[in-house]
Length: 572
Image (cartoon, rainbow, N blue to C red; front, side, top):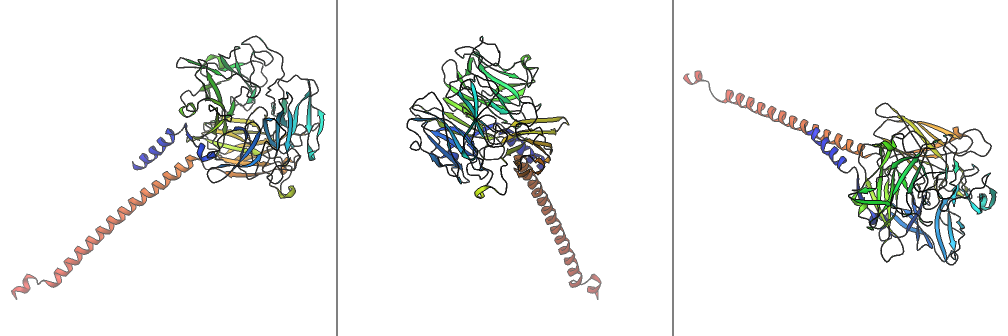
């Protein structure tokens, strides 16, 4: 009975905190929680993700992860004195652009209010810095720069060995949207990422979908929505010019049909809607598996159409419950009553981030304070305690392993293009698979993480198959992919694809992260052991007392028989 009560209490505590958020801003940043979060990356090559923050639109500060509070400290600065005069930083894209296995930092800027975008790269040198869409266009695992210099011709710039070389990118001319949402990702499961370019076909009639275009600017996303292993297309849109009504549409891979997965933005008589996008801050959803159920959720900022401000909301990926989404089987549900998010007023942006490197995605929310130029950064810890598991995968460039130049560690690179997929059997015996691309987007504050977190749900079984692939060079037909089997849940896998053309030689480092259920099980086991020891102790004490009492009584009888004369003796 006592054991049942102990387990019940532990179960109740875990369930009670399942969707709670905790404000940990002071623990993370101290008093430095201001600026615009622009990118993530392991700048110090210590397997800890650092944060790149823009301040006053003209300065970049890199907050390095630390084991002591505050857990993120400003260490590396690119000040306005280094940049040209009147420079406005529009985006930050960390990556290894010259192939030396050290993180460089690319900035896109506008100088003196020019309409043209200028690209500046600060080369990495032993965790220091000297003086657009990014992908590995030619499959050499060195990020390249893809963009438009002379519209409508697209070009790609290779920066290997710090020598810029320009080449035509696409075979046909494309008029790209501004802002765009192009992606570099595998759509046909050949483990080779390709460019998905969003072309501007001009405005269409309100509320209709034609050539992926709506009457208002929108964000185009690719993610796994229904757990079938394919990358689906997702479109958050405004349905009218004033953006009073919004919706999210989804098209499955290979399908031209757009299905509504969210259209109800009304709560307690108040209608909410997307914040209309603009070039500096386009309409965007940021994805992450909040509850590790294997279906990516989203964070988005909505505004009160009645003029009551704007807040960040969690969109949970749930089974479809209405007729409009039956063909895809999934839909989004808005968590209206998430008080921790609702307490942050005038939210501008929200994204997922694994603060404590434990595989559970936390949240960063940016808000605008009155009278201040910089945004305020809020950090919310996800106290998710349910019995769910994950696998976290980070694929490196593989340009070197044990022989890196200048003895640098090969971990500090943001590698776009790798593709991760797993297949396994869930607790009910059904086949389950999921897939994701690593750093498929980089422009317009996409805020993608340099690793992939795939939820496994409540299945604690080993992953049957984990596949990792990287882009191959043009003209090459053999797929660059390797399979790992029997991967332990709640583990982080760092894949080093070296050499690129020999997948059998690729290596992986496995790091385990004990889940909270393991901790609760250990506590319950210790409690049971203590309970059993107490029972044994009590029984042993009772036996000892009983033995002592019996021995004492027997001694008294023997003493009495020896010292006192019998009745017959008295008569004599």
